[in-house]
Amino acid sequence: RSMTTRGPLPDARELLLLKAALLEGDAACAAWRAWRAQADLDRIEQGSFRLLPLVFRNLEGLGVEDPWKGLLQGFYRRAWCENQLLFRRLASVLTRLHGDGIDVLVLKGAALIDRAYRDAGVRPMADADVLVRRRDFVRTVACLRRTGWTTEEPAGSRFDASPAAFRASYHAIGFRGDGDRLAMLDVHDRPFQVYARHPVDIAEERLWRDAEPFELAGVSARRLSAEHALLHACFHGYQRQDVAPIRWVADVDRLVRANERSLRWDRLLDDARRWRVVSALRDALPFVAREFATPVPPAVLRRLQRMPLALTDRLERAMRVGGPKWLADYGKTLAPASRWLRERGAARRLPVGATIEAGYRLFVKLPKRHVSRVVAGWFRRKGAGVPHTPVSQIS
Image (cartoon, rainbow, N blue to C red):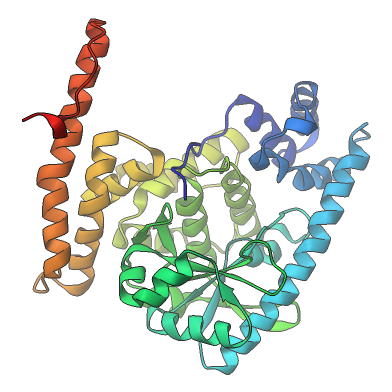
């Protein structure tokens, strides 16, 4: 996977589109007109494109007549049809896994449609995501392969070579069905991750104990509690991604509004602190409350600002948002080690191989990289025009 390039906050144009999708009355109409005046549907970025069905439903509810209404309605209908097919395929997977005694939680869009949006056409989805217990991950892969699903390469080959090594570096594996061009099912063994290769270890039992039942395409399923779904939406959305990840704003806003009276805010904040992911809430919730009047209680926002951030949280936040770069570099090694030791107890030592690799990275590779950056920056500031020699080549 390529290095992610887009930050989590919308730019000025994307903010207009989000307001057209989420606000009410004249504010939504004005935002839509301003966005449409500068938009070119032939060149619209994917992150914005997948918001258009939600915009259609909002404008339709406001009784807005617009030259683009037919196009928007077409996008909505296509998303509705594709989601129905996706739900049916996911339901068959759930039935098979349940039959093998494997517990499954539905994540992301497939779980949010019924709970937060209540309209299958407003949130397009390219794939479905499920979470299984860590002890069931290898068994889940085997079960799906027996039923005709194939693992996406090269992840499948890496998994086959060493399931333990694969799971130490990856949080999920993608599956394709017969005739699929891309993976449409992602199986996770941990709910939180930074990028594709930095899984965030947490004590998982709380997730499963609080999980809620719901129905998906006529099949009984389970999903995260409203509090954990909100935390997941903030953590997963508020990080750099290849496609502009601005849909997290809609997910968070709709989740809070749909569960406003039942959200247990104290439990949400306590779990975020326990799992050291407070920064995701601190970044996301004030933004949606300020820009979209999302009903986050002021007391919750004040408490968030007072909550200290654990070092692991700071390291992973730097990785999620792309800076400070030096902190993100060290986070790639220190954050997983910190979580490994915390989960298994300080008495358990890191494996010898992992310890040697981490030591080399921390005390050799990263210092060289940072010195190299400093030297290169010095030459740029001086404008000397002297070609930069990497530190690794200095004798």
